[in-house]
Length: 227
Image (cartoon, rainbow, N blue to C red):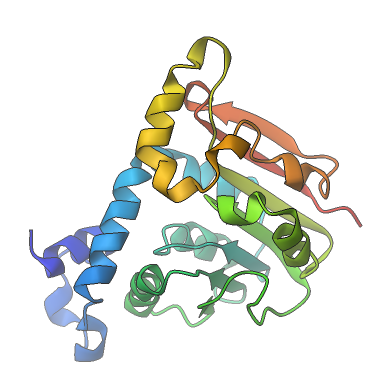
């Protein structure tokens, strides 16, 4: 499959590429497309949970929301739909390749209220006073109490937070741990901390509600930051 075709499928061009301005048709690099394709392949089972996670943020029109570790921008459409053109979405991604694909997605959609920052969440020049934060597959941040605490200082008191991703199942589903590690391991970091990936977040979100999915291989958590 050619690069243009693969990007068209991933970003929803629907065969309209010929009608797009030339500057929008500049494709991301081959390395960026390959990494984004691998990211989507490893997260395809999580696709059905994305909208559920965004829904738990209870976003309103005009809200400012942080999309932490936004990857190639898979959550941006759902976030943009909820905050509308008057809201602001700030995506943060450390990988230059994934950020390249996310930026192309934003250009194609013509979204003027989406900012993408090429930095770790703690070093990014984030504005203070965000209304909500989405941590989707952001295990690198969730597993670091220091980075997580610094990120949450950017939010307003009582801000809404939603986190989701993979976890290692227990009990009768324990054998599925090998499947999780094989498929998602390269993206999860220190897997020994993934029995309860939300543990550090719960210290800042006293009302955190956690639900497990996929026979204990995934989770969705949401609540409000302690004032």
